[in-house]
Image (cartoon, rainbow over all chains, first blue to last red; front, side):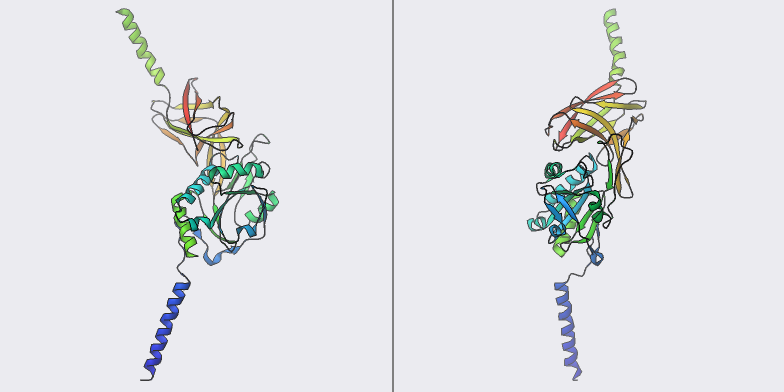
Length: 206
Length: 138
């Protein structure tokens, strides 16, 4: 008979514990409509340093505290890059919650530093959204970042003139979390409404 | 009477020649800031003829040159390849759309304004030409 109160206390303690942990930690895995969420496989990015469209330093500290979406391309790319940036702009406009929007930053990283100076990047990114950030760096510095996140890029040898070349590049949009970890990836084709729903889910659940 | 018949006969023969072109719809140019030297052009092409029609080149007074390209994705990597000519089989359609075939319109000679119509001439393999209008969109 003495065991019953103990059992009752034990059950109450267990239930309380479970409730608290459910309230505090959402242990459901994040399932994205249009991307891949790395969960606890997210890895901290190595140190890197780019220059943004205002000629300011863009390094790991600029990614801290925000959800960053990074897309890699070049301004002389007529089709894929404008299309992807337009999708990212449409995605931001599809997010109604201003708090969620404010916690996201979009960074276009040019893998063509020879032609894409900050002076070229500024009107380019701001054409799609005045808050978008453009950035680039010498190839050796870019590679410190791109190799870790699986972004490929190469100048096409088949292009004729020295100033009129194409650059092959990955189509994925990279997600970096506020702890500056590589947290997810959105593969092509990119869908603005679906990405917007995914970002809302990600920001609200973390 | 004979004159009228002759005129009618001329018209009947002239009509097929006038119809020997592609049906181009929804032709548009994705605009970018003036500092960027390229623009992408897109359109829907229908060949309602009973023979293959081949576009060999395009020109516009609004651009230095126009090329045809195809965006390709291989294992997550995007690249472009130039396309010399575009052949549309009899009765077939071809879409120039984001992520696929597109026009690479080089060096706009003036600032383009959304809503503006840009005149572009298509040159066919059989020496015929066709003038189309492409709408500039933001």
